Image (cartoon, rainbow, N blue to C red):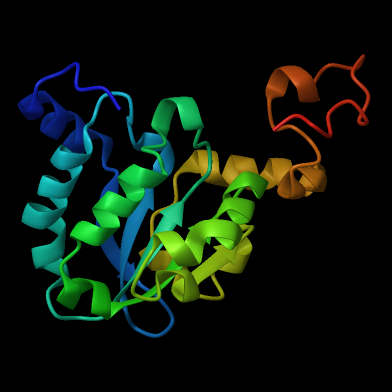
Length: 198
């Protein structure tokens, strides 16, 4: 991650992008901390600024109540808006123990094949405190409503659009077909050649 802009500008950018939002409840009545991965400008924000924001604005609002996290992975690209595994682990380890103990579930919406494989392989080792056991993969928005109250959580339009793409191209769920528009819309590219593209 790069710190090309000042800490004050990073804070302003983080606030405007609405990456973190506490709103709604899951079906067990726990508050929801919604995180939109696509909005996370990993190239511009440093982990310390994110940690400071969480400590000042999010953790106090969660208080001593049980809560769940809805992480929307739709549109996340490693080069643009992914803070890296070490960054995620550092943020997770910085969460106060009392807040971490109140975390009931992490709903991971639209996980890619790489994310699933990585977490299945290394998740137990990287994230302490049983986080891996609280992880719930949710492949479609419709399946999310089995866990979260529908009218209480705001889902961006691009997430619904991705869901629609998955309906017409289900192999994208398994990493066997690219979601890259240039590849998927080209009539000269066979489906066999798209299997290795991620």
